[in-house]
Length: 100
Image 1 (cartoon, rainbow, N blue to C red):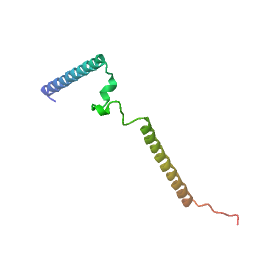
Image 2: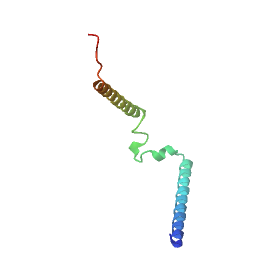
Image 3: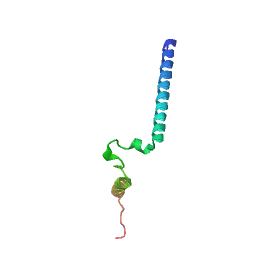
Image 4: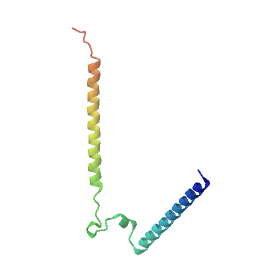
């Protein structure tokens, strides 16, 4: 790599760092303004439409339903796999009965 290219890369990195610092300071300033206005950080993540204020689509009941369904699917697949494995082993190694 040429020295001119390295200098240009270094300048690009420094410019991007300066841009990130500026964006971070502006975000901090916005957060302080919101905090001073009395609205907490929860309002930042709520929908902006008036009909959406105070509502969350994903609540505890919904997450319980999703995780319960996921657990049921995982357990079902596990039981099915072990059932098939058991029968495959029995088929591969049949037991011979000698008592008769």
